[in-house]
Image (cartoon, rainbow, N blue to C red):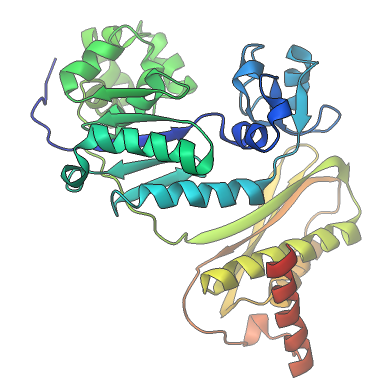
Length: 378
């Protein structure tokens, strides 16, 4: 096995413990110790967003259908997620991270990587940074997190998972990483999902040890991807923590509890979606040049339709383009509808051609007023 024991990099991975559920328990202590499932309600169509550790004892997991979750845990407490509240808490958490480094890669509301290679010395080392993040997250936000310190992104991620919940672990060399994972499933390797694991199993590779012993088979089966997996299993991870950058697109979609063929109702949904997206991009100070409509029919077939033109941040423009595309698609029951805005730019609003809706100044004022109401009241 190869070894890179002299890697000086120090990466911290922070993962909040059962984040959505933990926020709800914090705000309502009566929920403590109970199986709490955040997502759809039992009579609705949907999935589990997250759940408390008490619910996980019943076999409930994130992304599981809510029907299956209810079958396994019929006495659980089911709640819809409150994304605005979780986003606000997430901002508090992320603010703590930036006190230790400017190199933060946020993966989601509750998870991220911090490269503290150059800054850790100011705080007593990477281990001290990790424990400070845990302490401040508990004191300031009232939540626990699991933190891992590693010489690479994969090492830090594995370390944070080692002692969950409220855990801490270090993997500082490739030898330590290899010794930790050698007898675990190949799924432990970054990027290896169930389909890849199934393909490897067909040639007798189920564990990392099997991979070490049959490198040639993995390379022949998976090509360059196989070589990448082998390197990661040997502790060689060349990825770098990449600070957050503005997204190239922003979108929002809605799944209906009952499939609908009422296109006037669908347009009403698109109108609300357009208003929310308009508010979002105005807060970011960007404009959209592309509007994309996404539709999923009752048979799960998904289609997208896109149109591009002059940049806009107006809800009415976004809605009119999406509604026009909706009018042109096949009319049959629909399960999901959504809008995404792409080709985001800082360029100012120009109302031409595609987005020319011949608004009066009064209509523009109404748009602005609606945006302010959206910002104030949600």
